[in-house]
Image 1 (cartoon, rainbow, N blue to C red):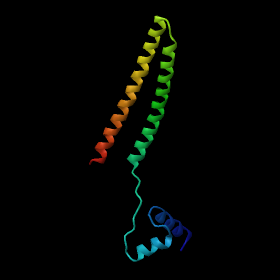
Image 2 (tube, one colour):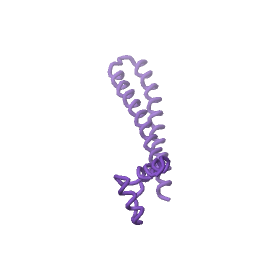
Image 3 (cartoon, helix red, strand yellow):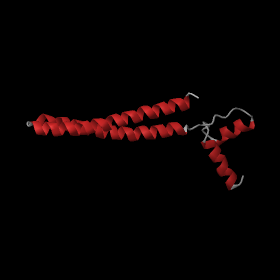
Image 4 (cartoon, rainbow, N blue to C red):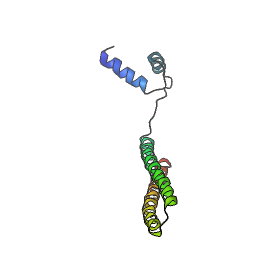
Length: 114
């Protein structure tokens, strides 16, 4: 077997559930089923999107907690009004991120239900 053929065989084995080259070769020679591993690219994309959104939502949650602590320390009406305006912006961003999650989940549902 040439080096190129050996590399190709190893690559084929790597994408199956066979633990060894000998098991893979035996199955192929005897025309037994070989189970091939399958990666779902749309699931990989989904996980990547969800991890990014999780990070953003955690940051928003931390900002919200800090904002509430700040609210408890305010004692003037003008300071409370400033806080309320800032809080509305954070709330808007938070709901945008939630909408992104729902939109992405709907896209994946449509893709996977076909």
